[in-house]
Length: 212
Image 1 (cartoon, rainbow, N blue to C red):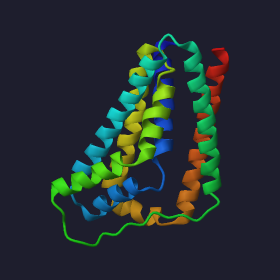
Image 2: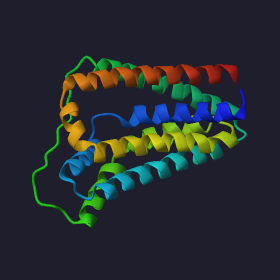
Image 3: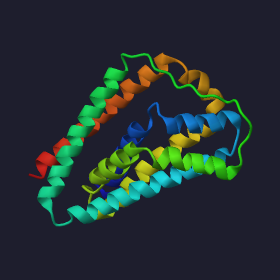
Image 4: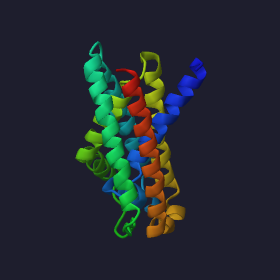
């Protein structure tokens, strides 16, 4: 594999992983969608969520890389754990596809000051324990498996997934809201997410086995 193909491969894997983890019904997504529907400080909210995600991803990848450096056994254990997690996550997504879910949000109320909206975005982002499990620990441990020269591409891929999703939610809110309100749309999305997570689990498991 040439260096160019390796970079594209790592970027694509990270993008798929980041998108699969962030695309789910949750308070943060509902908040971003709500701000988009209201047309209220959308740029601020989108940039804040994307930048915080990018910083957490970078901290996770670089921090985990430091932890596992020169510890081959720990690196293999984290890779195996990541493969198991992604498998479970993918199965859960496929199970969710059998259920009827929808993302709803209220657009009622007066416009809030920018700093209030920023505090709300911070709360929805940083007070969610899953952000540290998914973004820092899981993405970080998988990114740490990459060779040093490819880690920046992994970080960029996962960060671009977050940015793309938040931009889509915030600025495409008026078009997306009716679609997100349909259970069938989320069922299709969960099927795609489940498939992507299982494929990534297989890739990570292969890397784990070849490293033994």
